[in-house]
Image 1 (cartoon, rainbow, N blue to C red):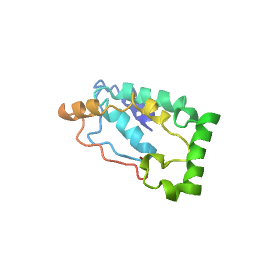
Image 2: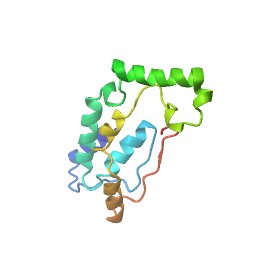
Image 3: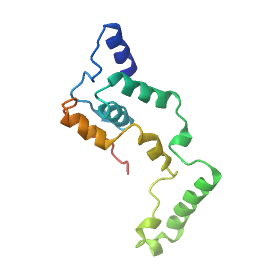
Length: 138
């Protein structure tokens, strides 16, 4: 949808590069789609292009560590907690939060979503608000 909006703006001769929306919102994965253009509100087309590039070339390995060692490591933590977890309950670091290791997601999102840039866009008046909702995400 964002790609279509960017194209319509270009087709209508819109010369202003800034985001046309003072408030952008998103839920779950849509929060990423909202936050990425919000962080680059001064160049809407470039932000949408970058976001499209990520989603058009997306692979599960960019989110989850799905190699054998990663799955075995996470599985072992789950098995330990299910079998003798009551003994280890005081060790909070030992508690697995997800079935698959999703630490790769940070490397995918860091170039797209910059909180420093978001604050700058708000200070400069390119954006008024970015309400997002992502329940159950750590």
